[in-house]
Amino acid sequence: MRHSPLTLALLLSTLPIAAQNPDDLPPGQAPRGFGAPVELGPDDKPAFPLPPKGFDQKRPDVPQGKTETIPYESKSVGTTRKLTVYSPPGYSSDKKYPVLYLLHGIGGDETEWQRFAPPEIILSNLIADKKAVEMIVVMPNGRAQKDDRAIGDVFRHAPAFAAFEQDLLKDVIPFIEKTYSVLPERQHRALAGLSMGGGQSLNFGLGNLETFSWIGAFAPAPNTRQPAELIPNPKAAAKQLNLLFLSCGKNDGLIRISKGLHQYLEKNDLPHTWHVDENAHDTPHWRASLYHFSQLVFQKSPTPADPPR
Image 1 (cartoon, helix red, strand yellow):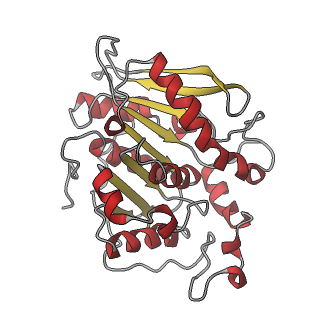
Image 2 (cartoon, one colour):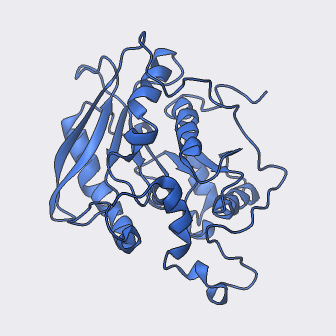
């Protein structure tokens, strides 16, 4: 059975993490489970206006990129796995492209983004409008185990989501760099994701800044490590990051996870983009976040393309 993103959001409170039990938390730290009361501060506001109508709809006047699902050998998992790759319109081996590794939520797989926020449409539209650079988008299966199907009790797969770090670094990235014409340096490599994938992006991206310099987390879930663990040396991280993008919906019961990181970044003077929109833990938020993030990533000066009105 495949779970909808909204259903998964409601189920997040069942995750077997210590944060669900207040007795297990350090003094003064609140629980982080889904459905907790939402408390907004003065800086918890949109960094961007709403995306324009039709931003996620195929336009007849816009050349479309190519999307394909292909197998790769995962030595870390010990099996053949699949990932989905978007290449921009006019892709050519004569040119080198930056790469965005885009991760799904706890109930998704390598096809989830295409089902509700198709990068092949959103990116192709932005590239045609010269609002995004030409890039390759890789959508792997973030569940690093031999049976990686999103069926049954998906929350039992939590260890496989953590194990994906090695699959990503040792198998996925090398495969992409051998198969596609890409720029291999860290400044041309981004990592972003939604919910569980947002937590993975923060955990793996900030934990491997020698590999990624552009990081985005769209409503990250409770798998996200604590801020001080994510960024033990904020000054060093600030020198390595081109962009740290953090977003959440104002009606998302998981917002305290994002807010906690944002407040830590503010306290430590680490530049980042903090965007809070009108949504909940839902597909409209993730779809819009991809739209905004795509316009910042790989730009020479990553600033909001459309400042708030």
